[in-house]
Length: 233
Image (cartoon, rainbow, N blue to C red; front, top):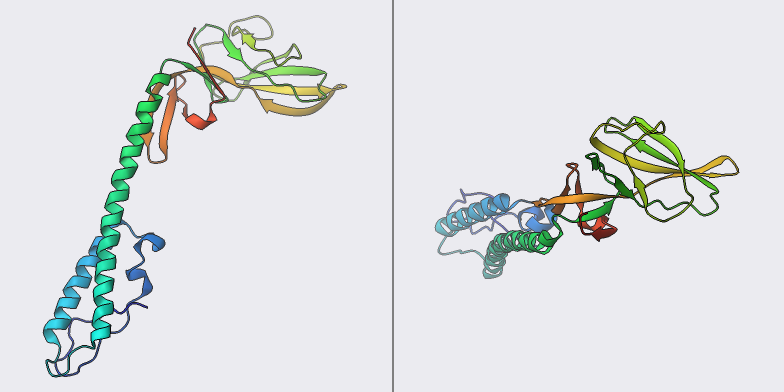
């Protein structure tokens, strides 16, 4: 239990100790207080403690045990503020370390399910038919979510090169596309799954949530979402 000053106007001669402070005044980490809030509480605590000592009755001073508790509280708030500063610096350092480790990935192609940029060159897909499927159909959607390709492809988990043509053989416009695989068994749809594609990594960025990779489509992904890497063709 923590005792803290709640009034800066203690009357001389009372010999009374201040009321107990709310637990949140010393639990900055657990209550989600920001570093600024902790520092503000720290400064306020110091001012109020100084005022209390200045106005206490010399003939009836504050109980030594209560004073010791207040000093411990003072030290705890100060340590919490310093800890927050150290954690912030450590977080920034780790973020820079992540950027340097991922620098070598820039320019490579990552296998992801994020939107992939089509620039006229074929895109490599990695279909994975479901168990029991006897037929699969490739769906290609543009950035607006419209299906521009709906055609059967070989029932295989081998890489598939989509050349950028629709079912009629016409080239689709350049832009961002996503891929899915419809799985059929005896003519019945049994599932639709996203199809990973290879997209080029153009940048690594540090964000509030950690390090992210930026694809040539503009999509931002976490490094953990990448299932394979290869050199760009």
